[in-house]
Image (cartoon, rainbow, N blue to C red; front, side, top):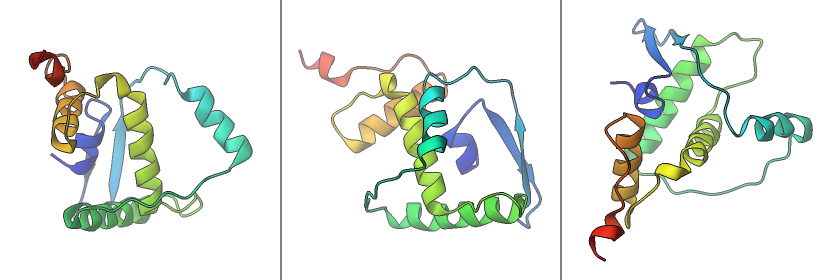
Length: 130
C-alpha cells in the first residue's frame, strides 16, 4: 500500500511507473464539511508557521513523496512541497476528528487509521478503564 493510499483510503488508487510519474484516479467524493474554510483560505492566503518534529522515516518518505508528486504534476501549477503535504495531512486529520480517540500517539493513529479503512467504529480506550 502506498503512502497516498494509506492517507486517503477509498479516495483513489495511485498508479504509475517507477520514474515517479503518477496519476490519481479520482472516485466521486462527497463535499467536505470544511469546503467553505478551504475556499476562504484562497481569498486570504494567510498562513502561520508551526514547527513539528518528524520521525526519520516520516522525513525521508515525505521528501520522496513530495518530489514524486512535483515531478508528475503540470509544471504550470504551484509547487508541491513537503509543507504542502503536511497541510493536506492536517486538513484530513481535522476532517476526521470525530474518529480521534486514544491516550497515546500510537493509539490515536491506530484508531484513526482503522476508522478510515472502515474497520469498525473508533474505540474509546478510556471507556474500558471506567
